[in-house]
Image (tube, rainbow, N blue to C red):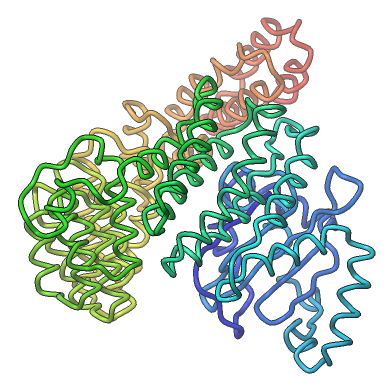
Length: 587
């Protein structure tokens, strides 16, 4: 299942363009999505407000169902019923979006809210009952939704546990589908997330009811049938344990209740221990420690004290609980004592103490990711200029930049400053991003922002590139600027770990007019290892390079030299039946 949330949605949202679609997935997945769209596999494209749905034919008898939620900036989130779990959108989501871009491909329909808002209660109930007759899962889903609705009284854990067992039983027999994970982790995560509104409201008791209702059947059936599954299932244990620790620390459990729950969770962890997951250890720590420790109480009260090592894993959990309960002074005291400078500065922003937050960040934050998080908090809190200034000043700090990892912060500065028409800051961010990454994408972004001032910035960036020990996009950037000679030298002496073959093919084409002799030598050297590859795919790559060599020989008028060269290769590889025809075509 592919599921991704990207941002807030709006009802007035345009379909994304190709560039936005390509950004959602790996390039290889995008290309497969194009093939799926071209094959006519996409049908039933329907748009209801900001939601686009489609059916996409695949390897199963029933088509995969794609749902995309749109925003004014492109795609807010997406979902597909296929088992793809490898990061980014799957080919079916890509295909649906590409197909939707064709004129007249999408049918516009009213939103479900508009359809249902004015229906009498009896009519709506009748609709649901009739739908439940065709969809046996609907009744269980409704029970879960009603059982875990904040503000409607105590949570009934029975429907949640039943739904968890249903999900686990349904997926257990066919956990792996064509070497791709098809497990229930996505649906189980959705059940676990039913606890989130209760945690946010500080209602630990009801959150615990949800979490225990999912955990118990999960452990029983995971141990019995799926003990060696994919990483997502291990991460689900981590989520369950962390959220359970939060719920424990915000609940007024009696001593007897705490002891009973400790015994239960300790039993779960004992059963899991031989398989590796340690997710419930943190919940056990929360149950054992509570809030009563004298050192912890001293810290929360603002007094100097050393927290025991057993508290270390609980720091982040305690901070979340204190934040949810608006116990901000205690939050700041604990964050300061624990040395969590990012949390401390973030709370200062939340409290509107902007000058203190920025000063604390300048003095204590040494991780670019923490600076970025704080800058985003400042921006969201209505202080965009302070956010941009924080990012800029941080990128000028040697202690922050020398360790690397600043490209993401620099890109954020570049893009947000450009959006706010702060061209000077956008250029500084663009330069800093390229100085860290040496990537073609960052180079192009800098060119777009520079506009008429590109010439001087271009020279600066090329100087940075020349001084870089490693830059996988070096040749692509030099070709972008028409510096074919420099690109040829870079290709000969490249120390980069990876250079895209497509870039080197472009280089061979660009160099043909000026130095065909170099192209011939380079192309033959590139082809040589692929001739020994032993697979049709590698032979195709060898033939593609030899085609460059052939053009280079002919461009020099060396027809007589090429003929014996290709004949020799044909003779050498006469027993390689999938390679020989490719070589004979180059005579």
